[in-house]
Image (tube, rainbow, N blue to C red):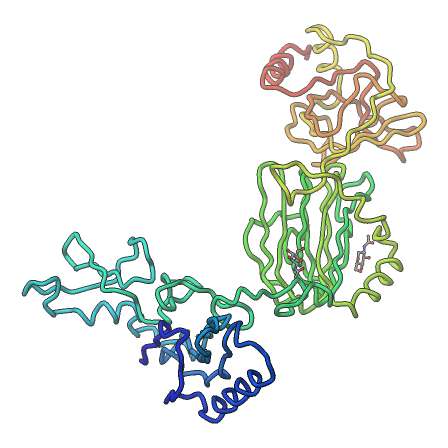
Length: 480
Ligand SMILES: *[C@@H]1O[C@H](CO)[C@@H](O)[C@H](O)[C@H]1NC(C)=O
Ligand SMILES: *[C@@H]1O[C@H](CO)[C@@H](O)[C@H](O)[C@H]1NC(C)=O
């Protein structure tokens, strides 16, 4: 292990014996003398020698640092050179064997059994990570309640176990995408190191289509090569993702997958679901194959917001394909994106507010007698969640999910349509709400239509535990 000495900054280096070629220095000197002769003043900064070569990697396995240096040549009266005299670069050797002692442990262990702290006492030392400067060699005396700081760790020591940063000259530095520690150079959204996001295109839309029926709806194709994919929606619907092979990555086949990280198209897809209810999908990409984003509707779609970055050459085919499939990708953008609430800057668009209901008020249908009449006279009594409402000329169709059955004369499925007469049925059912409903079975004379009917002024009460007890009570009172 070679210890790097970054401290020897800008110094005059005439007669310098290091790596920088003497010839270069002489040329520089000549140039400077000539410049003076031509009347150029000797003010301003000095000149750097060219960079020396990179040193060997500081470690023998795993990650380490390599350094190169240059020297500042200046005359009296000249300022210091601008910039750094040393540059550190990440070097990556094959992984260390699992039994190898971590670099920091090794440095602490150097003090094992040696008298330190000015006494003859000796200790066994192990790294201590609770001290303020993580690039100091803080070691804990095993079996004792103190640690000692033995100065800086060697360059190339990880700042903390599992962290990305490495200690260099006592500072914790992360490598930029150019591999230079502390350069701060980042990969742009197109995957180009130090790029300006201009070699790819940003796709950002809100999918608001999808009709009334529950099930899977195509939202968008996410073409191969996509990066920085983010999808969010806020409702009880579920995002679903299908791979290029037609197999679901998550939330397929009507089964809800647990939140977590999924492997798909050569990238990790992070799926989160909050009780909000809110769902997000995120993947860094680039994807190695097409993905199909869908939404599994259980209630009206308030909007699925998605975005990703696409290589330029993929954008044309993507647009063409989307248009050919008639997918709603031609919405004007980015005006479709609604302002976001400040507490969730990256959250999905909000549910649009609905126009006021133009229906006249309904007659009052509360009361025990009314409940008893409908409970006992109905074919079905159940607790239902209203998923959607579809108004037609003569009748209204609700799509409901049946949560609890109190009474049924024939089997009920989990999802049913409940029909109510008229455009403004009474009592009205609001989407997303839960009700206790009493319904009739209505079979048309020719037997082709078998429906659940919620009669006018029938029984539909917002569901509550109290309502549940009343329904159970009513059940005992029906004439047999
Ligand atoms: C690239 O885009 C990202 C996200 O919009 C932004 O944070 C970043 O600053 C952009 N980079 C450049 C170099 O413009
Ligand atoms: C959704 O997209 C897939 C893949 O292109 C296609 O096979 C399927 O027919 C689409 N489904 C609908 C309902 O458009």
